[in-house]
Length: 105
Image (cartoon, rainbow, N blue to C red; front, top):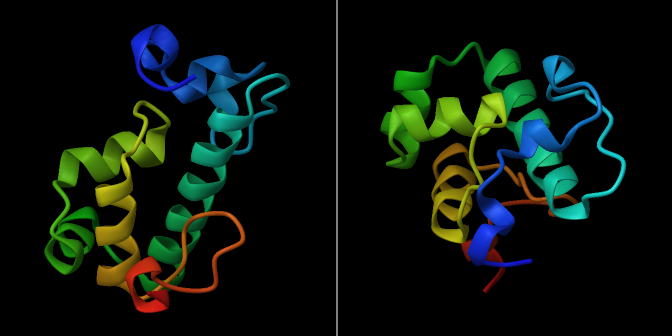
């Protein structure tokens, strides 16, 4: 479901209860569940480290609004965004990853 209309609906809107994002139930959309897991991981790290969006943006080089949209489930992040966030924060965000993607290459 890449490209086309597959990304015209925000991940959170594919949840049964979008108001509970990122802990909402997403019954039939595995890609939205991946974005949800990424948003949960990012939110947890931001909270644990006491980081604001400006600091995350400065560390990662990702636009502050793009970070806010990811956290809110309003966007489908691309690989470059995920890689910059992982490298900048020194954490793995993609489900099952143990650390920044570029450090595994």
